[in-house]
Image (cartoon, rainbow, N blue to C red; front, side, top):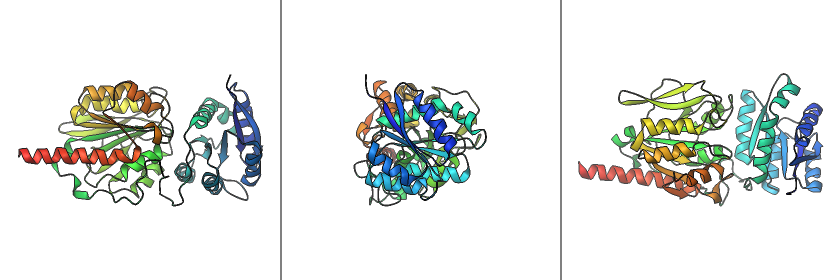
Length: 367
């Protein structure tokens, strides 16, 4: 028998501390070894008890959760699951927490706290289990720098806008799937894509209310335009479209154009949005004009559909284990024979751009 996952709960609400402790202690494979009502108390408790995972509230007295997380990940990196409020500000702060190195987050309800948290119990403990085995890295000193050894390309100039030429970008579609650790991995790929990149469609496992902030944050960092997908809109080159949280997102064809379909379809592989849904549509609609990228995440969502894409003629990239926060989804994609190349995170976008440029060069030589 392996030892239990030892968890410390940090939250200024006595009710939340009690509820989370009870949820954790109901599990056979984990135990709450302590609770703290603010980060300063938590700091001493972490030193004394050396937990495997901590859950951390965002808004607390004396030091807010984001300041504490930043210090913790610089000085003593460890798995953290954020407890976030489902508000616009809460979503923005959660994006910052993931940037600083939090493994994942749970959106606690604003009303009906006791019943709401109990309804989220299975999600909470699943995220704690994932965090316990995640590859956590020391937080970078700069706001948007990536950690050394994590496939970072800090100081690397993005490819020039002329890296890809005209016609090819309208024919191709790049499909990205990710889950745990994916927000920062997606950023690492997108910031390296040139302004005239082919259209990019993305499914990141994320609940409703958080993808708006995620898209806005990426849009401010990238040469391409990043936005949430809207049902019926045309999928355009130079744009990245993110599946809105709590919906299903797939591609359809309207004449010569690709269009987004965003609907209230059922969960697939327990996920909504699901990578499987997006990738399966790309296999059917885009075929050999597609590229697929599978990034960090727990589980097997999208692996079978990524193989369908490959069988339909797509060229596929999978993030390697060394640079993944969680190697589950990439491992499953490899096991399904879906990968053409397995690369460190920081090498995926350059490899893709080089392949696109080579295709463009061959096209011009034929003309």
